[in-house]
Length: 425
Image (cartoon, rainbow, N blue to C red):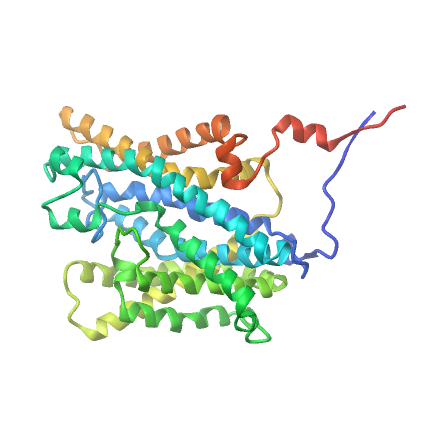
């Protein structure tokens, strides 16, 4: 007869409030909730980028191939709310897993792993994804009479905005930043370990309000350089202020790994922090509209905007981390599949979203009535997920690209055979 092996509890694993498994101090323990949260931060990028074509007020420096402004502010609200906490949350979780991986495998194996899983996909995406994305954007810009095909083919534009903001890493910028942080973390671990071990005790989660004490640090960044939040700079090299700002979240993630057995303390405040983030965001959005309209003369408005944005960001980061720890109790095969696919989806989603929106735009021009922006948004998100998930499932997951992105995966049949132990009579 056959007996199915059941997953066993990790030795020493604790159970937090409401049945949430919290890891012990063993360096090799992983938290599935954080895996899912990291994937969700990347997947939310699909929704964020799908709003850009329909923003009522464009984002400074962000060039898009379609410009069909919505009469309302709904897409702007969604864009800026996601923009406020999504990337900081991603880098914080990335820092957590960097510390975990370095403890588990050692610094040299960690460095090799990061160069393979970040540097390799970044180089591949630059060579294979950015060129067709550029020409797709060129098609949209020519259609809008913003540029000519001669300018697109030469890569030289008379338009000032295109000249400075069209050429760059685009949506791949976060991989470049992550690679820089990973390399710096390796240097600190191997050459200056005392810096990472200071202070000897991390009190970040000792009380409910301590996680929000970091507001004062990010407030300083946003007060000096509010463009970190309000503008997009499409560059080939990291922007120094943005690199330092997001690096803070990566560093906090490495600190969070030192108190990973206290993560369950975030659960009771998770939903309240999320609600509070929405309330603070209302103020941020009002101040943001003033800034984007050109009203930046008031120093008082600048520091209030910086403080409110910083508070909103940390409330969202800690709130959604707490919600994810509370809600992710079991390992679902579907959630695991989507988490594995998230990296690939993010890499390829921008040209898929852009192509869908361009086709909807052209169809809209041939119809007697204007298609609602929500239709273009929904089709863009749906098509991007459908094509990316299908290509991942049937062409990427078990192939060379999949091994490059997340390591070798066993096919479902192989997993089943590995889980079944055949007992001879």
